[in-house]
Every structure is written in C-alpha cells, then in structure tokens.
Length: 203
Image 1 (cartoon, rainbow, N blue to C red):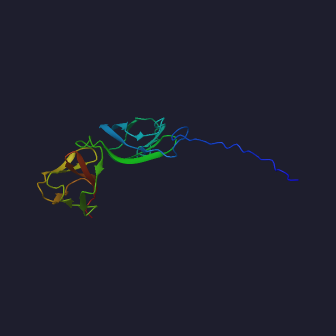
Image 2: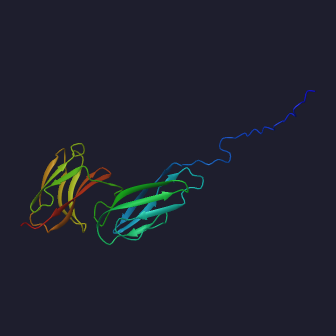
Image 3: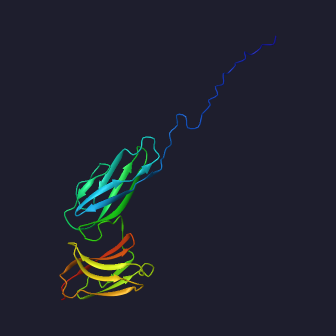
C-alpha cells in the first residue's frame, strides 16, 4: 500500500513596502548659522539655522565667549561687560542630528559695529608685543581697496593710514602710546580684517 504524505500548504505573506511610508530617515540635513547686530556693548543674535527635519529645530545652545551662562533661546540678546572680540558658539538640534558654528563678534569698538564676521589672516604685525614701532603687513590681494586703522579697546581710533592704494607694508609709530592691547583693522568693502597687537613700555 502506498502511503500518501499530507501536503502542507504554507501561506506566504507578501509585504509591500511603499518608500517613505512609516519610515524615518536616520539623519537630517541641519546647518547651524546666525547673524547679529551690535548696539554698543549689547548684541542681538538672529538665528538662521535650517533643517529638513519634519518638526524643525527643537533646541538651541549658545555660548557667548565671555564666561557667562549659556542661553537656550532661539534669538538671544546678550550684553558684554568689556570691549573686544568674542567667539560665539551656537549648537542646534532637530531631534535626530545637531549642527554647530562659531563666529567672532566685536563690541564696543566704534566703526566696526556692523561686522558679521572678522577675518584676521589678511594682517600681520611684528614685533608683537612692541614698544615703539609696529610693522604692519597686508595681504596683497586686498591691499588695493582697504582702509587701515588702529583702535584702542575703548573704541577710540589712535591711528589711520587711509586707503592703501596697493601698498602692503606700513609702519605704525606707537611711541607715546599707552601700554595695552590695540586692534589693527582693515576695512575691505563689507568685511573687517582685524588682528591684535600688544604695546608695552620700553624696557
């Protein structure tokens, strides 16, 4: 006698997956960015960060570079105690990814209050520290259209060289200048190139 084995019919379930339906990306395109406006010692920060996350950016973390408490608001207002340049750090998060940026902000220096970002690689000063004369060298690619000036940290201009007209090397006679930190600035269209030089008493 031939025995027939029972036939087991297996039900096969086919799962159709529609792209994007019920699935969530592991990463998002998030970019941290901000600009700012300065009024004396007070800075109004304007968040310009972006993300493609469905719910947008959900948290902000600001550090103002002056050892003050951090801030978690979207568009903070911060007042500094001392004139100078500060590195401001912003971190944003959208629930999945984070983005970071750091920009330099200058406060309390007359004539450079509308700066969005400072660039220092266009100017070099030597010797630094100095006591009498400071040699200032300007990047030749921008020297033809820049205006060179020296400011103290209280916002007073102490030296001016006018429009450079192509010259790249200059000497600042700092004799008789009070010891301290000075800001050598080059206004080049909408950018401010800036570096610091320390004047000390002659030994």
